[in-house]
Length: 550
Image (cartoon, rainbow, N blue to C red; front, side, top):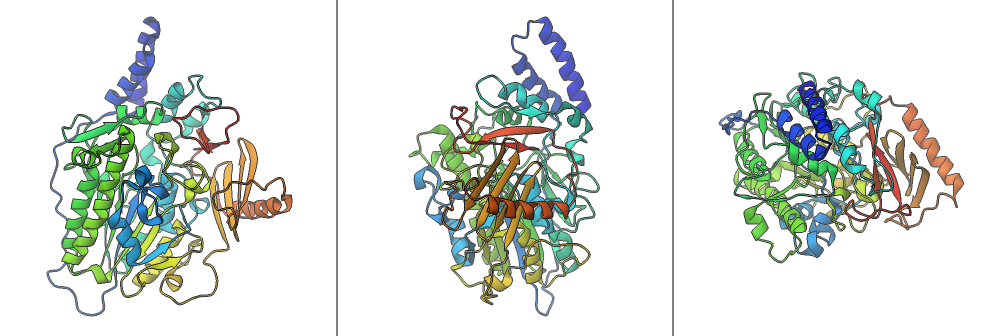
């Protein structure tokens, strides 16, 4: 398929040159969209595997539901006192989940982009252990984006290594190695029925798919639209200044797959569709222990909301912000429906529910409040890119309104959930995460779960050690040092004033890197990201920025 696309593009470029290259960008997007799209069958009814008619006697381990949002800013939910549009959009169902159990107030994503975070949630291991370090992008995307981004309006260009790009396998073959042991495999060995719904982004071949990685059933997000662009029930908000958005609108479709079968149309708006199917899964498995990994696409671009949710927010005058807020209504509604389904089936008191996001909110959507009060965005290791909500409900074991203020991370979810289920984690490899159940259930270990947390994306790395956080990069060549205990929003860079601390933390980073392996796939491009401005703001040479590799 990728070869067909680029042959078509090459032919089109010949025509464009002949016509004077008047509209070459429009032609490229048209070809990317039309040559890359596939036939989508009508919606098919999913017949979920049903458990026994009666529950088996004896003590039953808790069901496990992991709800993962995509690109959710820490300020998008009202739990922490914020909310979209200055608090006009509240998230009562997510807030209720947070109050029902534990709120981990200094929780960190595994990575500042989505796919490595998802791998760390599944394995409890840093990306440096298995090499799944960079987020795979759709075939052709890194070739197209610089043509739009590098238009002379920004001081720092998007970079692309054409030679490395030729070494890249197709996106579906860029996956988490099958030798890794996932949460699904661990719980399956404990007798759980395992179900994945939504985004996967860890490869889609016989080795890498959700079914190959321990999930008995998988309803896969097969493309990237919430509804067809011209659906009468959708309201769209295109982000004209974002090249990624242009590519997604041109290329993506509303599509799903079930257990590796052919693509078909989802039934309605994607967030609601996944929720409805999740409710069916809960009902089908009410008499046996199950894992449900519900990986939503919201709040990722393209920005699309249902007309009903959009109409519910007339007080928001900015169209893009209103669509974004309406998307949040759907995500919050999803959590409410999941919790209601557990109550209806009599499972609420024996089900662990986790809610988190794969990374912070994206600056390229042009909405400045999403990560407040933190600096930075998705694709930076500033707190705005890494801070994520993490709420864990387990009635009877985790007391309501529990607060854990120590730093924790996505790598902790697999060992924590395995321990709660009475399952065995692998003993033949390093598990970097920590079982958090002693801290969550009141056992009071008397120490923090971690002294040190690490992040790495190619030449850009970060470490948090006993309250001190260092970011270091080769592009630009710079160090950022912050004492989060007194400066949690990273306002004062102490790197020049405290070279000894920089050296100490760099030694930790070097040891961490030496204990791992290199990335599975090369870094083929680097994107400049302003730390304190959105992509929609004018950029200057004076702006603080990082280059994000991968």
